[in-house]
Image 1 (cartoon, rainbow, N blue to C red):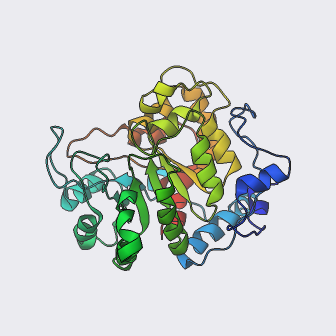
Image 2 (cartoon, rainbow, N blue to C red):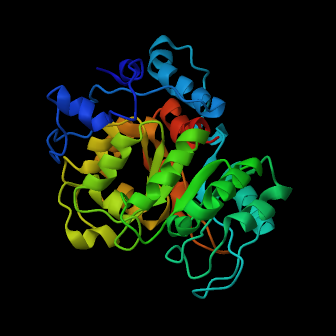
Image 3 (cartoon, one colour):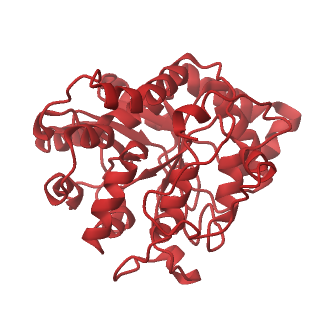
Length: 361
């Protein structure tokens, strides 16, 4: 069953997850590397309709994508050099830290102008594990107000603040206030917890209600998982209404099948072994995306260029361009990717702007 067919099914998320549907059909998952190819086939699943209008528009665009490509009705995106570029992963930093100067909204815009970046997602950093200096959501919303057409704020709430929820409803109130102020997605979710920690469920459910994508950072210190990403898969399967955007070491090390425990916080080198969990998860679930930003994304796409060429060709409809820019003068090699790999104009358009545009609220 292709991806368009999957989306025509329906089911109650209260009783059924995508994993359970697959298992009931005899297509149980968890066999890491079973497909052994970059473009592994997708499996049957159900996905309920969303209430959020913005997310419905994104779903509709992706549902029509394969048909449009075949029929030629999709507008010609033009040469890559003329296409819009939306950076799905940037930050603003209020104080100097790690020998890096702070980064203001004005400085970010100047850097974007110098490098041909039209718009950027600006991610909050609320958890203590996220960075030595936090960039809280309320502050991010304040900073981007001067550039509403170019800077798109994502906000977060550390799940450990849920201790105030039962008695005061403080987290729900805060979440709703962020949405009212223009929150376009949830992230960067980088809390020092397992990715399936029960405290995260309330936040996942709020993102369901508002049709918000979640950009998360997974490594050996934050949003942790085991080798093979079983916890992530269970979360993705259990929340098919949420689009998850995966970032950092523990995700990108799994582009290869030969992952060890230490690789979840490192930059593995050498040739990529086919059958990795990243291509398998991308092929199986239509609500998981890869954020190619940072050293982890760059490393995954440059350690084995031949493999990366096939990977980009197979999964361009679930990859988003990003840089993880967070300090003045930071070197960003990702802008050279458009010259390193040979993709169609449509494939580059997906990575450069279409995919992330279809996800943000």
